[in-house]
Length: 443
Ligand SMILES: Nc1nc2c(ncn2[C@@H]2O[C@H](COP(=O)(O)OP(=O)(O)OP(=O)(O)O)[C@@H](O)[C@H]2O)c(=O)[nH]1
Ligand SMILES: [Mg+2]
Image 1: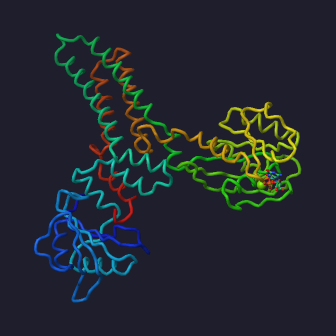
Image 2: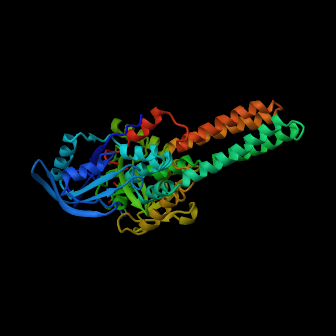
Image 3: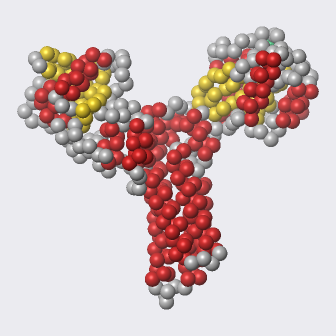
């Protein structure tokens, strides 16, 4: 439900920092400035004023304030902001004074929710605000900014317009059978619905969306002692995994996160793959390694360039031949016995000297190229677009099977309603609650 009372919250990150901003939104925002700030005769909107926050005769802070008059504000209501000294004390005392004056503490995401309710932004843009706040790498942030700029909204609106055109074509055939035959109408409808269904599916790149949002999973694997842990440490530029010359050193999976060219990559170092000679713990590690390989976005097969191939190496190369993979000939600082020409685009690397590491990083990043650059990058949007595409496909099939156009119309209306849930034209209260509750307080 939309409440129109006046709310307040800390809008900046809690803890130490240069400034702390307390944001107030609602009909009493201007009154709060008058009650808590050096009196100003005439507040001008969007202008900063210098003075003191005072409550009950006590000076709380020396600060700047600004009033944004509705509708030119974040929420489209009157908004007041107190720009206070950082640290928690000043902000806390101003907030307490506001609460004492009857202002309510804002719930998580309530400011953005008001912006949505007052029509300043649609739902996909509200979600973009959140995605931007929590973006881990430049890639995720760029996808969020595109969404914030309306990339998703305009894509969905265009699809909705095409759908409405299809629906009105069908309505015309139903209402004026003398002007357009049912066969013609059904053929138009079928072609249009299929085209739109394909277009919606094409805009959903689940793998890319996940990689942009969560990062790329890269798994280092190979038989014991080839240098997987040494490579992980070199890539992480940090001693994460234990390195020894004893085969079977690594047992559990060790992870390191690295940002490569704005793309977050989660490297996993795994237990060396071998069947013989491993104890119980190591065998569990080997099982985990196999699972990690199966779930990887890219598998990095590490071979020791200074030793001939073993059966384990050959087995691994065979097992991963259809997977997205990179073959690394490590230890190339030593006398090489493997021939690069025998492998598929191998990289010559030395974990010891650092040779070839940047090529490896580049190759890994290429597996995330283009991730998050399609129209839809959020799981919720992708799910809805797929649902709409499916309804459109049903409509097209109905037309192709010679079923009455009225039946296809029901599916088209379904698809239209589903798309409306992306932008929030058609949403229920529960969904809105769910989306905004994931925001942080103060946003
Ligand atoms: N000369 C040279 N030695 C290396 C290189 N990489 C690793 N080593 C050495 O090879 C040995 C094994 O390295 P690790 O990184 O522990 O190998 P691993 O593949 O993780 O081994 P497990 O955990 O037992 O599966 C260590 O003595 C490393 O110092 C390299 O590029 N050049
Ligand atoms: Mg290891």
